Amino acid sequence: MTAGPRGGCDPALWYVYTMLAWYALRSKPNKEEFVWHQAESHGIDTFYPRIRVNPINPRARKVRPYFPGYLFVHVDLEQARVTAFKWMPETAGLVMFDGRPAVVDDELIESLKRHIEALNRAGAAPLEGLKRGDPIEIRSGPLAGYEAIFDAALPGRERVRVLLMLLGRQSVSVELSAGHIKPRHPASH
Image: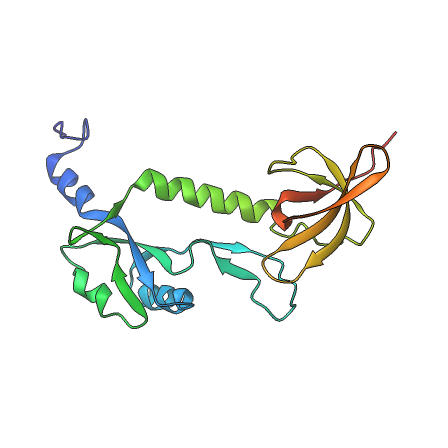
């Protein structure tokens, strides 16, 4: 094997390697899943980052796009022409800068995959089993580390209201992202 630009890689393989790249593909509003299925059915390698959510409305979607309106495709644009993505139903084409498709770095895609996996593994379901009056811990955000009392799940975008105890017995109502809290388990003695 002869040394190539990638340090030890055959120059012919380097050419093949550089042809495949990740690109951001825009979808029309709320059509990410349709575009994802369509790309997959055409044999296109995709990454469609989604997170599990606990909507207030039980009939609402339990999985939502992490980047609404976008997904990623891993293609060789020499073979899959840019115009194919522009005219694919329910898409708005590849993200471009100065008329050229913007390449998304492989390391960024891998990092996003790990991040999405961690979010989903941690459970985007922090409200599961919580009832009014239950003790919780604020795990992130400006109030991270504080303990509070769960008050209510708020309609809309995964928000909650908690009661934060300040200065003695005075409680203050605070609205937070549901992802910022976790149930506090009583210390076992």
